[in-house]
Image (cartoon, rainbow, N blue to C red; front, side, top):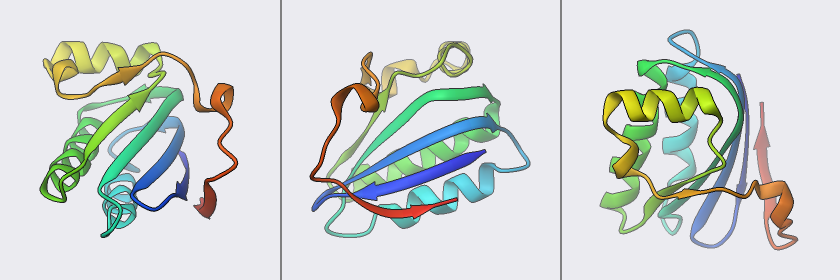
Length: 118
């Protein structure tokens, strides 16, 4: 799994790629929660390049959603790959996340500063 996090005033934008499974889901959870520090309450997740996601990956997404909602924000998924869509549908959690179809690269945002990359 690769993860990059960029920040704006109240939003963290994360791009995740590769396999998201039990071997890396704890790191994903920690990085997403770390990105959600006041004043950042919103999280945008580009999941277009995720090749596999299991239940532990969903757990990381749900933990980020809980933190974001506690801070008064929310989590939005951008262009989730078919493996991500399948696991969201199978788990019944699809309705918990707003989804955008367009990828973030199609919507270049020069106002976003790079925070970290793994």
